[in-house]
Amino acid sequence: MEILVVGGGWFLGKAVVEEALRRGWSVTTFNRGRSGVALPGVQQVLGDRTSVEDLARLAAQGPWDAVIDTSAGEQPPKVVLAGARALESATDRYVYVSTVSVYAGWPDHPLKVGDPLMDGPADAGSDYGRNPEGWLGPDLHYGRQKAGGERAVVETFGSDRSWLLRPGVILGPGEYVGRLPWWLRRAEQGGEILAPGSAGKTIQPVDVRDVARFAVDAAERPGGGVHNVTAPIGRDTMGSFLQACLDVTGNRGELRWVPDGVLLEHKVRQWTELPLWRTNEGVWLVDSEPAYAAGFTCRSLEETVRDTWEWLQAGNAPVPHPRASAHGIDPAREREILAAASARH
Image (cartoon, rainbow, N blue to C red; front, side, top):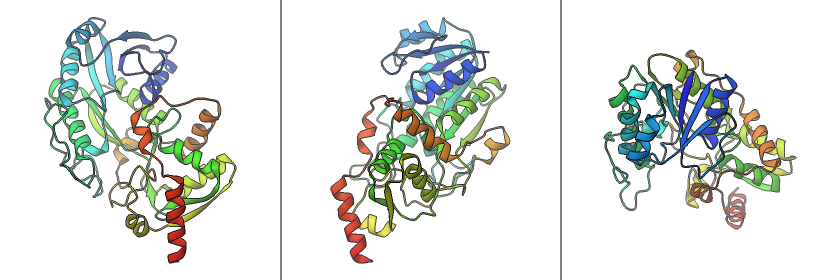
């Protein structure tokens, strides 16, 4: 197999490259070379996916059996569309890593493949679908942009040559968003730890290496399709996740569970200030059973937590990213909320 990975320098893209190399495949990467490093044995093509000239130069390097696009997360649909059109004649199929946020019902309703999607034209620019000023709901802009990206791929390659993979939260070694690293560092500090909501709240994060393996599987598989890619509903909980963080960091902390209502009264920012905490009913009710039937496997959350901690302890650091600064609660604010919860109890 010969594949092109758009991205390929860090986190999911790097994991995809590592998995393909492990299988003995020939791998070309296309990125700007600003984040991460090229792995040995990879042909790296430097360029910007927003440049028509760079895309034409890239296409001339083909052909490939498949393209795996891991770097479209912050690109508007029209950029995905231009890249897909440039590469259409240079590859058999296109694997596009999307997100569950493309569903119109996310995060308020349980989701399955086939449910209605966000609006988002294939040729939309970066301003399309922005949230209104003062909007307090979920980030519709991100979902609309990614839905447009999906349409750009299918419009170009057709549904029989396009694989659309929709993960939820991706964790694991190399995570740059800062969700799991923040909880690990907080657990390491010890003391009373503000644990959000309830210990039994179901969560569905997935390991980056498992998403990468499934993407590489899709690249090898003729045809096309759509899959949600999450951990099984009901397997993991917020309690088991935070306990795993305590276990690997030496069990120096004590979890203090604070109900959703108290956190909402204190205007705790959902999803970021206490990473992975969100009160919307459907955020962790994503059906990925068709992916499991197609061969997807998902390692234990405890293994993901342990491996990420070992990765950090070895002196590694995520690629710097502005999203990381949004994650985590100020220590003084954490103490204030814990005191208020204690007084109420």
